[in-house]
Image (tube, rainbow, N blue to C red; front, side, top):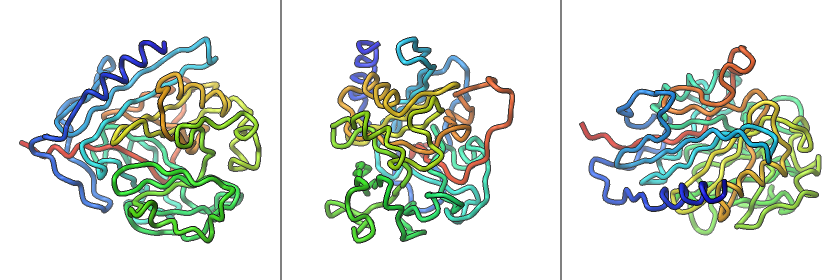
Length: 301
């Protein structure tokens, strides 16, 4: 599997869209991307246009004891990594809809659930929320790692041990932060995998995340400049150390990997169709407050 994953990863790195004709920077707002020009088919594993390439996979794994799904994404510009609230207006709204509905609104080539921005009981109510360049909540939950994504699309993980409240979270390394998440924990930081003890520490995750339990989970990672990975596991899930190992199996040189919301919120949508856990429980998709998505910037006719 490592050899296959490495070959796919190398193929992804070879894709260059720097000279994409018809591409433009997407606006820093809540509008979406360019319409994609193909329809979803169950055997379609790659979407590609001059500005974006998404390659998705389903892997039944005896080694990890679960089926996992992942997508490798390359974009031409950082503005193509975007976020959206359920009500199209405010990331602190309690409005909730399934990922698939939000994804279709904004022409998402690939969309995943976010970190559940709405305030509710437990240690999510004070988390930091900065999306699409706008600050929505300037408080932090001291026990949770922060993921900051800068204007160049680079990931920066700020560990919980730092003084998160005093830290300037709107700029990092001299660059503007355009999206920030506080759920976690980080699985990999600056190329260094987190150890089991840290990942299994109950205080290092939201109270309901159960790091030692076999739960569905969603991971977002950066593997290179403008190159990303999303990974989730199906019923009946995986522990956090197992998710770390799955990420490293797919992308051994992954720079930063971060845990988002999980459980039944775990939803990965490709070209307007949910591709994980399809028909496994027969129930409706859980409604969530926010998504992360990757969009085309190819507005050529």
